[in-house]
Length: 151
Image 1 (cartoon, rainbow, N blue to C red):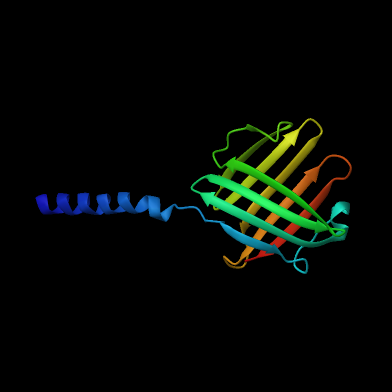
Image 2 (cartoon, helix red, strand yellow; image 1 turned 180 degrees about the vertical axis):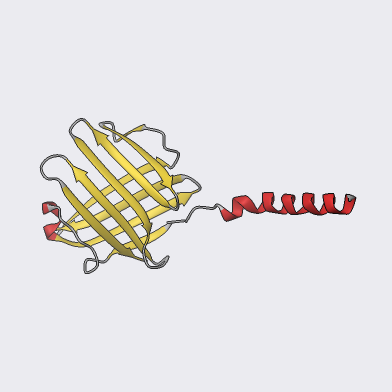
């Protein structure tokens, strides 16, 4: 009987130690180059887009996304830091935003009165393909962009 109890305790201890490893979220860190052939972009401003790069630094639930686009020959940069804990925080002075895990995908929302940008991030067919599915509502145009990036 004692052997059985010790065996059950050992199995439970092993499973408890394995739970964090089994529940780890994907690491999106890396440099991602825009694949214009696979992407589907509705935004009018993206018509002159010829190149794009995302650089993501991830440390646990802390993320930094830096990106640049070449649009009509001009480089446009943006950088933002967020924590994937679902808490609403001020971003870039004018906006509120939150980032949270939904399963193995990241769900980001940045908004203010009359403006909303929601992006779901995930791996594509494999871990060398990164998808950013973006829905923008506001001026000057509502749009849905499906961004595909390669490592």
